[in-house]
Length: 561
Ligand code: ADP
Image (cartoon, rainbow, N blue to C red):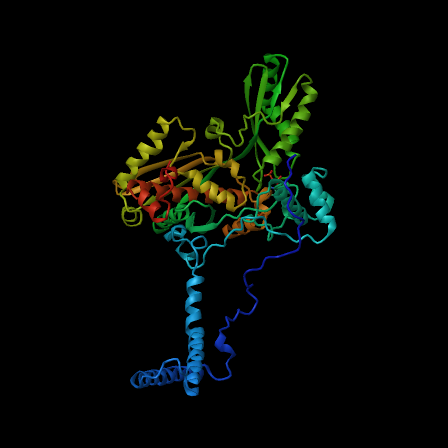
């Protein structure tokens, strides 16, 4: 193994900046050492300079007139020359040094380069230059020889990195040691990836293995989103410029027109194991058995033992030769529910094995579920929460807030979101950018971002109503997979975002109502996002707004696809 070693680490913290609590550093000038007040000292040296200059010029003229050699000096002339030199040195030191320093210490291009200045989007942070990320790995404090030894063992491969947490019993130290070992192994710096300020105990065994730090994503706020009579401030974690601003504009248009309303049509998480039989007819036997209502009731009892919150709703079977795919669907309370439904499915498979001993369980997941992959079954049958959300946007708001017209929006929706997507052979992609909003809200609220694949299935409809004056807009999203307990939802930042929406944790009054409410907020936010982006395209503003937000170097068509 090619292991690049750096010199042994020493406890040297580089502290080039003054911490907030320290008194400000006073910049000393040579004149600060003077015994007299500054203005008096300056006055004396100015007077001295001009008087001796006058005296010497006068003497010089006298010598020329009397033909006395210039280098023959009297005592008074020597004293005058010395005084003049002294005053010149003082005056240069006082007025000259600051000027020279200001030239020398002017910010250099690599720290605050005009070309790399943030654009108007980042006007708020214009005043504080971004921190300069070190090119070399920072020197970290490792207090004991034991830790240094541990780093060396991880680098050498004699201690597996994944065992650090259990060996040390301290998740933060484990992450620090793993990180340092990684830097030494690769010779690459992780200086920009923060380590401090994160609760590594909170992710142990459930959110992330072998951590070496955490990535920071800014969270913007769109809102208020007026949905079903309540106002929500929607947190969006994104690095996509314009996205929050655009969603915010959509929220404003919806708010001005009295808000949006939503409905949860179905709440059903799915898992579909694949089982194999010696013959296709035996696979069909199990299909008929499972679909018999009496047997289903028995299976539901077995399934529901997995959790207080799991309630089996149905089993949708599909056969491929000797193989049977059983798509179990159940409600999962406030959890997104993948763990819960998988446990229930395992209970049922164990139960079925008695009556079908020739059943061979190939996998607890046979992809008919279908999790984190584009699949028509989710688009048609739904997965997680199926939600529809609508609003009527008045003609005046369309013109004044969205800067377009109802007719232009309806036409664009038909040609882009419906016809264009049909031409593209889209699967659930009959929208402008639902996944932008879904991903940003998912990351902010601790959802599984990989489920963005099916959660972003959405058909956006637009129609002129009220004699063609107003716009009816709706989004129908059959597979919003969200939870307010479990997974990343319990981490501090994500939990704070859920709290902002009023859906943190499990609902005590009615289990499942928090996660259903979150699903409607996701749909409402998508509605706002669709309204605003479609308006921008209809008005031909898209390229303009992206240029304004300093994205001229990027392909702006990406956000509109
Ligand atoms: P998931 O099934 O989404 O992967 P987890 O299994 O990580 O979620 O978390 C669900 C856990 O939370 C279960 O152990 C469940 O018993 C518990 N729980 C507590 N309150 C609720 C609730 N209101 N709804 C669903 N689960 C809840």
